[in-house]
Length: 142
View (tube, rainbow, N blue to C red):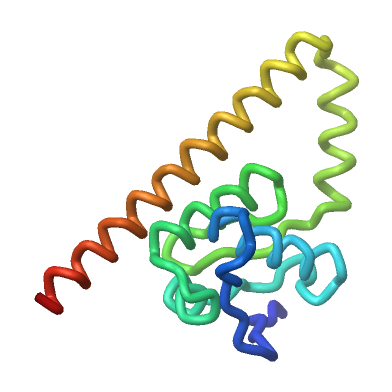
């Protein structure tokens, strides 16, 4: 039986952290998975709950979840939610795949560059969203 994980504390992304909010949320959830607070098969809170817990927008939540999916920590089930992936089973599958696929230093360097570019693009998108929100609040006040 799967359990739905609930937050024990109200965590917001700290304003003095230089990382984009989606990275802060993704890193926090990843740490909870690695520490065992979230176990294989556990359901993550809904997008709305994650928005409230981290004080971030829906788009930022989706970016955090995408990062966790890309790193192999979670998977989605349409209409049901996001769940923690069984990393032990994944590791065995990855090992079998990597044995059959050659890897090169050039490929690894390109992948690191692509990941860096993706992070930079997401940071820019988050900043635009933040500025648009601030501009909207300024217009409401005026």
